[in-house]
Image (cartoon, rainbow, N blue to C red; front, side, top):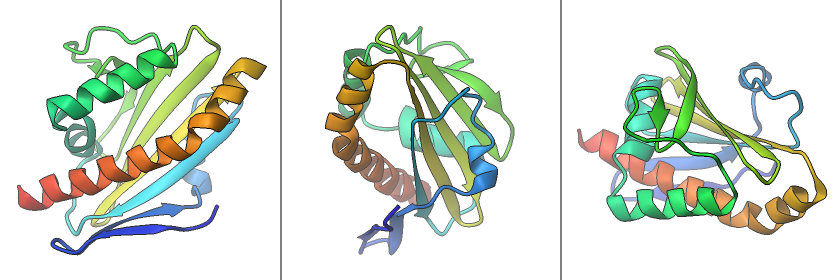
Length: 166
């Protein structure tokens, strides 16, 4: 994977697309990983994985959360009530400890998705894992991959700003 970097000049925080570390890949519970990406947020602050989930998703502005959920629903993800302690914007919390949170959601279209948040010294490793179970989903994912990566980068830049300000 080519490494790209986005920097917030006012906070000197950066988000870089990185190769997924093998030990992070091993945290996925998918039977097969057809797509993966990983981003490293250098935020200059140490937070737990749960705090990073909150900063990235739960504390995002309502308009951002609404667009995320709308996009996930368009992918056919079977999201459940976000008010549950075991859900984040409808994604099921599969695993949670101070260093790692793994969110999971399946799609009625044949996609299985996982979002990994791993606390790193001074920041966050965020990874997406996708299992594509049919040609429709494979074709769809190819069309949205670039937009997915842009959205993730933006979410992480803003999460870094929120955490640095707190």
